[in-house]
Amino acid sequence: MLSPIGSSDQPGAILRGIGTAVPDTVAQTADTVAFLSRAAEAQPGCTPRLLRVLASMAERSGVAQRATVLTDFLERDPERFAFFPPRWSLEPFPSTARRMEVFEAAAPPLAARAAQAALADADVAPGEVTHLVLSTCTGFFAPGPDIELLRRLGLRSDVQRTVVGFMGCYAGINAMRLADQIVRADPSAVVLQVAVELCSLHYQKTPDLSLLVANLLFGDGASAAVYSSEGPGRGRILRTRSQVTADSADQMRWEIGDHGFVMHLDASVPKTIEAHARQFVEGLVEDAPGALGWAVHPGGRRIVEAIANALDLTREDLAASFDVLREHGNLSSATILFVLDRALARHRAGDRLCVLGFGPGLTMEGATIDVLG
Image 1: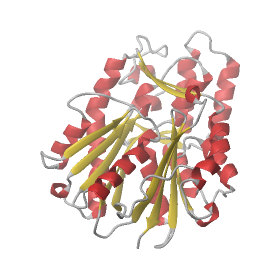
Image 2 (image 1 turned 120 degrees about the horizontal axis):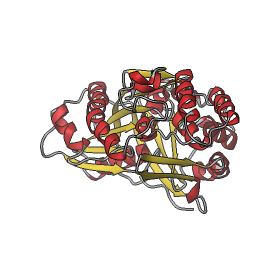
Image 3 (image 1 turned 30 degrees about the vertical axis):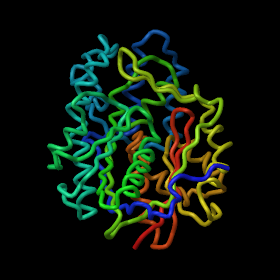
């Protein structure tokens, strides 16, 4: 068995503070279903059965609401649309270039809100930050959001920047591992991790059930964390692990199309995760799974339930994941810090958390964190 990464004699990074932020517009699931249904009805190939299945899946999704930078999802009159054309056909459907314009305008201020909250929680001044690690898979521009954050936060101009791009939901743990490695290599480093995702920009109107469910599940948000080798903190990273599951590359895909990025989710994803989760966790942790607390990325209700089945966990064990899914949906790489923030609050000093995420590949990412006082 391969050894987990991050198990050297050098102490792991201290997680000093966490911050989160979501857009002001919040769409209840009923609002989203109404929008998706009206738009789907205006497309060729839509059937009454598809709309019934969509409504049924929405009821079972575990998502009560999601935040979005697009106010159109709350509108019942297309004449009031601000982003889409004022007709339910949504034609001409917004191009990828138009969606990137919105990302460039909306992502940096949202990311800055989360970063400011994390710095305040850590009691760290912007000028103390030496490294910035930013993850996103929902937008591109250059100079990018990392440079925008320098200006908005008042970071030093010589901050060392790394962008973790287009890795999807598990990138939040990837960025966490990079922060840990930076601190282990340079104990004087202060690392700011930021994730910002505007998933709702990539709404697809094709009356395909898998696309509609993705539109129902994913929301917009940003999260951030601060790490250093010393000082008070909420947790200390012990080790991390990554694994790509064989013969599963086609189960989850994220492609750039002419009209936004297109997510493909296969119904077999939860079964694949359930089949491999126990072996992955056993390679990550030293203790028996039952002795751990859990911060699991809520890719969807069935994915969280698959982890529960694989590891013999209860709904209470995974309460932080179910709560974030209900209140925010899946925020891609930003989600795991929302979950970790709640999981840390539920545990005492001396406990240990197992952090898990999943994404294209099919990739499983994990970390263990010792909870501090």
